[in-house]
Length: 183
Image (cartoon, rainbow, N blue to C red; front, side, top):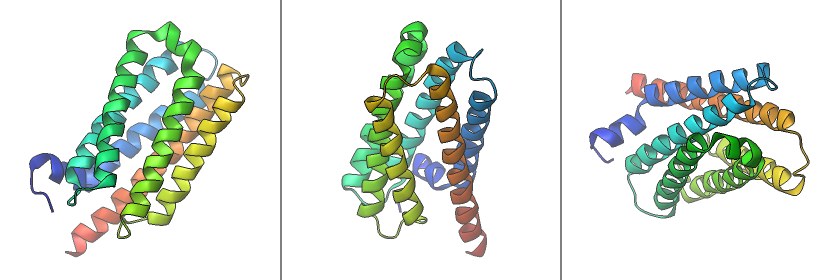
């Protein structure tokens, strides 16, 4: 395994725990106040995209082997960072284009999760990664095919998505912590 500090951070259970908790808090906030917080939601999702970009870049550095999964994870990290910075810089445009941005992102993120799971048979929770990846693709396609979904519905869906993503990260942190404790 890669022994750089960034690679060790990406393999740390506390990294996954923190990412999961942040995702759940942001998701619960989006579900609890979908109407009054649409502008805040655009900023929060921009921040989430930035956090996800950093998480993906760190994750790509922690993969021991080179290949498709590592490259896709790094590319997704850069795309996520750029989308997040744009969302925060242009909040009103982001509110108007939230469905499109989120739909495209969920499709790319979903395919990345599926390809990473297929590319790495030893990945812990591989079946769940494939499932959540396909769910992300389905959610993204739904937003692109039915753009008439209201922004309130979109904020609710985004909140649910973040809660599920956070729960998966907490489960992964628990598994990694259990493996580290047993070693």
